[in-house]
Length: 468
Image 1: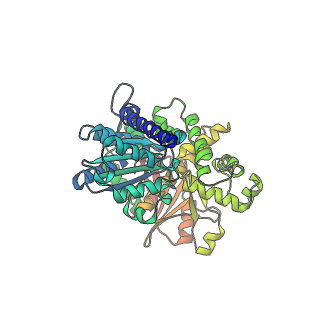
Image 2: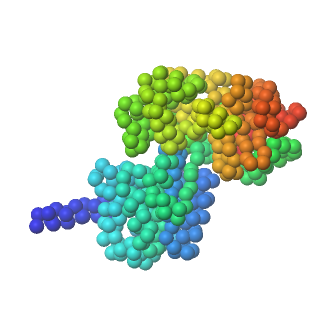
């Protein structure tokens, strides 16, 4: 009897939390969509894909699961909030449920219990939903069993669209069969064009983006200057520096101290996400030391890292693997045969340049000088090439020989050798790698005029950054 009474009280408590979650969602999410003055914030490109999936669901009424994942702090919650406000005029508020599992966890409430309480309040079981219903599950990785709950909902519910967000390792937590059926949308850091739009309201024509991408992939920038039409006058060199130093994550748009706030994001990755990835406290304590070595431009030979950090080589490899899964860093492997690639330590880049600045700033080592800006520009170029490699199903490498080029972007039929420099830069490294690889197209990204010499194009850094 007492047990039943206690259970009923627990159910009522969960129901009250569900009701409050629904009632307060609009006010809680407003800050992500509108400025303090009530002006609607600009939207990022990935939101169009999410909106397309929402539109598809409203037409077909067939259950849909979309997994929205990426680096912590990359803007996933903002995209959910923008979608929420797009739906409000056409969908009853009680049919749009936004819940962040990091808020439920301290209360001891699972996603499954939340959904059951929602069914009781609505007076409908999920199998019988009479109207289109949206469940936005933010920070999903805070519930160890969220994958089971989502699978049950997807398999049994009617008229339900589920959007789940979390870190980049999130898809690994789902049932394999469910992931085959789910739509996945990776949210990447801000590109320079997104930074200009969100921070300055400067819209770069999509036609120019596409023309620059085509020019890069074909390593032919002939006629591109005719397409610029004064675009370069809409921003300054300071904008390029600000983007590289602290503008590659959305936190820059609202924070008074972006590097300090970005460090809080890194701290959560170390103290929360790495815990959920199963790393010990001893290993986690070394994570920031590893990132500092990376941020300082140190060589990442595993044996040297093991000695410097006082961790076994296998532990170092595991820590790096988890930081890769969480998209703090990503590897660029050496060019060459499988045997050579296996022997060479990958070159690691920060997915968002602001993370390098953040680590250097936290340890008192940040300097706004050419050396730092050179490393940050290389991070940004690496991100762009990384995204292109995914899109084109190409491979991104670096030349491990002494004096070799920074990057080699190669698909099954052709490749481009790329060298990066914040200031002036010559073609020597590009030519050396072209001879080694047999590739005949090269690119130098630098501070200077657009020009071609032999088979090497020299492209101004700001022009390259307008590509995506």
